Image (cartoon, rainbow, N blue to C red; front, side, top):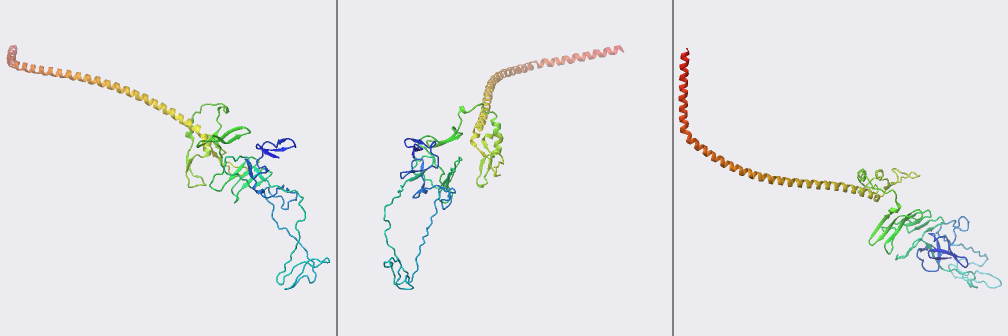
Length: 414
């Protein structure tokens, strides 16, 4: 068996063939090297230990069926030895004690003159060569499913590996760790202030791709010089029935922005929306249902993707711009009309001022003519005064005579 080009292979005696497609995450393999290749991490639980299959109820393991990754319990083995009791082979208090065997020879042993008795045994520990196969030291590595090239530190996995596809990678304390599950989820937790995960690449491009199904990319997180981009699919080839977004301003008016704090952080005020209120306006931006619960009756809280409100807000801003453009155009038209009226008024004012000047000039001429006439009339009055007086006297005489004649006629008639 060998590992090459990211694939485990097995030899049938002449040819190498792949084991499945790629290497399943959690695979443990032995490497005749002091370190693991890229994508593999040392299985530190195997250091200095033999690997054995889990018992699974076979009864071969005295510890029963241990969880994968757990070591066997340590135990001190008991050794029982019998010593035959024979007179004079022990001493009470001080003196000589002998212990040994008698096959026609002398007793073997040791003695002390006082205190506890000490006995020694002599012999050769090994009298023949070892014939059993010797073991070979290797490095056991676990396939982590990622490459560590470009990272200055080695990735090490330690923890629990099981046939169910679970990989539990805890650290000291039992809180930090990673859980990889064959059903398709990964869980990671870190109790310190450092990041849980680190992702990178040597040039611009995606560091994480998101898929729906086997081969359809629906989003990614990519990096460029000094920036990170969070991308979602938007290619025109993925869309149908594209049309302009209408009445966006009315829909934005239905949104109800609010200020609030989360119950878990009562001292921090935030601005945002209430999910089920947004759902009435933009249901595609909200995940879950109002007052939703799971099968166990536990709350399933709604979530909002604020980024999905961007098209609606953009369309509303465009509507406002069109309205503003119309208002500005109308204002410019009114301003042009006002300027035209002002020009007309200016022209009328000029004409009126010209006519007023002419009238004033004519009035001045008339005033001079009137003054001249007034002087002439005055002169004529002065000249006609004697004639007027004589005329008045003549008229008085004529009147008197007429009255006399009238009186005479009246007398005669009587």
